[in-house]
Amino acid sequence: MAFRDVSKEALIGTLTLGLVFIAGYLFGQKRKTFIMNLSKSHGKEQHNPLMQYVLRHSMREHPALAKLRLRTLEHDGNAMMVSCEQSQFMANLARLIKSKKVIEIGVYTGYNTLSMALALPDDGVVVACDINEKYADMGKPFWKEAGVEKKIDLRIQPALDTLDAEKVNYDPYYEKSLQLIRKGGIIAIDNVLWGGRVLQPAADDLDTLAIDRLNKKLHRDARVSLSMLTVGDGLTLAFKL
Ligand SMILES: C[S@@+](CC[C@H](N)C(=O)[O-])C[C@H]1O[C@@H](n2cnc3c(N)ncnc32)[C@H](O)[C@@H]1O
Image 1 (cartoon, helix red, strand yellow):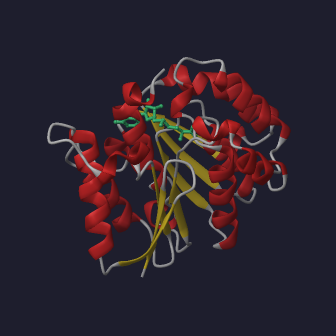
Image 2 (image 1 turned 90 degrees about the horizontal axis):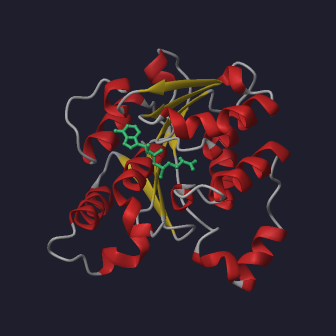
Image 3 (image 1 turned 180 degrees about the vertical axis):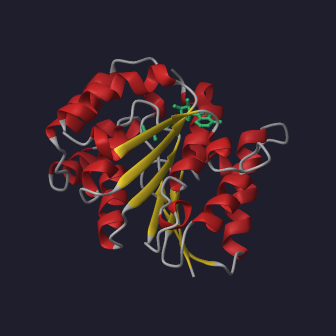
C-alpha cells in the first residue's frame, strides 16, 4: 500500500504514539509518563547499506517482536507499522524515565505496543487505543508469546473518547496528552516529516498542512522542551516542563 494511501490512519497513529505514551496522570499515579508512537525503516530505508549497518549493530529485538514484524510485513497495511529502531529507541526512553504507564494512540498490529510492554516493569500498563480490533488481533498471539499480554489494556474506540477529549482532529491529541502526563513525561509524535511533504505542503493537502501546523506550534510551545529526530519518518519528542 502506498504511503499516501494510509495517511489518515498513519497520522492518527503518529499523534497517538507520540502520544503514545502517557502515564501517571491518567491513572492518578504520580509517575512519569511516556506517551508515544510510529514509523518505518522497513520502507525506503531497507536497501540503504548504512541503515542496514545501524540495524545490525543496534537492534536487540525480542523474538516475539521479530515474529510480529515479519507477520505484519505480510499485511497490506504494513506501511503503517512503526520502524523497529524507532520503537526500540522509544522503549529505551520509557526505561530511562522509569515509566509505568504508556498510552499508545494507534496500535495497528501492536509492534510498538509490545515493545513498550516489554520495556515496562511487571506492574506497568500500556493503554493501547485503536478503532480496528482486526489489526490488534494479528498482534495478540505475539503479545501472549512474549508473556506481557496482561500489561496491555486494549481499548477499541476512538482514542479521543478513551482520552476523554472533545474534538476530533489532530491537535487535541497533543493538548490532551499534555494535560494527562506529569512533568518529565514524554509525548512522542511520529511521522512529523510526512515523507518530506512538510517542506512544501500543497494548498489542498490537509494532512500535510495539519502536521506542519503542529510542528510549528510545538516549536513555539514553552510548555515543553523539544527534539525533532530524522529517525523513521520523523519523530518529535516533547518533554513536559
Ligand atoms: C500508523 S498505525 C499505528 C502503528 C502502530 N503504532 C505500530 O506500532 O505499528 C495507525 C493506527 O491508528 C488507528 N486509528 C485510526 N483512527 C483512530 C482513532 N480515531 N482512534 C484510535 N486509533 C485510530 C488505525 O486503525 C491504525 O491501526
